[in-house]
Length: 257
Ligand SMILES: [Mg+2]
Image 1: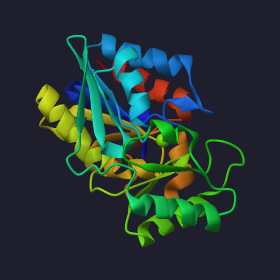
Image 2: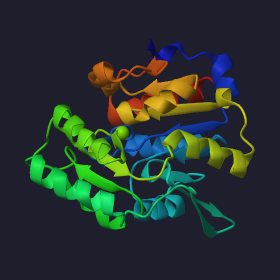
Image 3: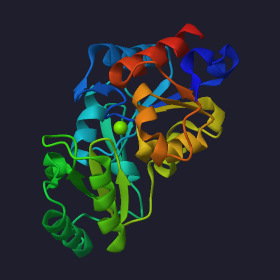
């Protein structure tokens, strides 16, 4: 990982799309900071296509697509994309997405709640369509990454897909990913066809496929805490964590354009 200050003007000039994770990438201790939100406006005002890529629920994506200065949002780890077009909210669901009423997910929920002390269903579960989210670090008590990995193992043993974010373990039944849905959405909506035109910001292991695929990827400083869990680290790292790190990276990018 190189310091974000080494991002070159040549690389920056190619960028048309700015993708970013939400939790602990543009938030700090759970809050969307003023400077990170300003950075989203700055990117949008600069004419870049701006798309958050998140594990957060469909219900949140409705709000984000309508009210944030973005060109769309990919939610539930790639199950869906929402965007506004001529004042109308549009929705696309991955053809492999399976509703979260699937019996395997309810079995996983029962096992996790009985086998992992203090794990709990995430409070935003009611707003989800396709996944089950187990909270290990959004609320108190904050549990360790080892506990999150144990939860993930239970999900996989039961035949589901599972990803660990900085706050939740998300588990679902269909085969899709943040990366696949991001590429699909950008291609269909904007004619995207070149990974070198994308910069991606993330903070944790569930962002790894994005770090691996996009040559211009940026981890906010806290990515260093997960070094032992990540094979494909981002190309660049910021000095600061969370919203301040995102703001730092966007400043560098916009100063080069
Ligand atoms: Mg995150």
